[in-house]
Image (cartoon, rainbow, N blue to C red; front, side):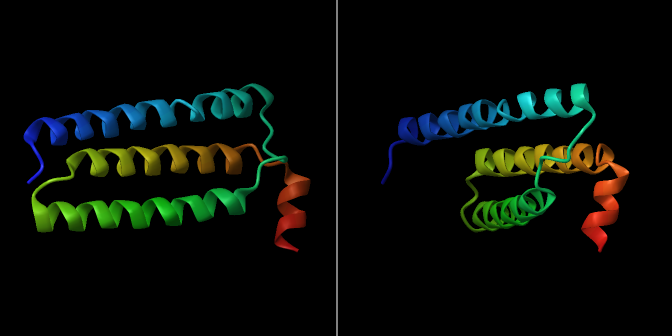
Length: 105
C-alpha cells in the first residue's frame, strides 16, 4: 500500500507539472498575437495533439471512475486540451488567405 503522503506529493507534482508545461504555450500565443501570422505553424500537428490530449482526458476520467483517484490528471488533461484548442483557434484566425487557399488545394 502506498502511503498517503506519497499520493499527496504525487498529486502536487502533477498539478505543478500542469502549470509548468502549460506556461510554455504563452510564448507561442504572444508570438501569434503580435505577428498576426501563423503561416509557419503546422495546424496538422496541433490537431494531432488535440487527439492525444482527448485520449489522455478519457483515460484520466476512466481511472478516476474506477479508482476514485486521479483528479490531478483530469485537471492536467483538461487544461492541456483548453490550451491546445486556444492555440488552434489562434492558428486558424491568423492564417493568411493565400495559405488557406493553398492548404485546401
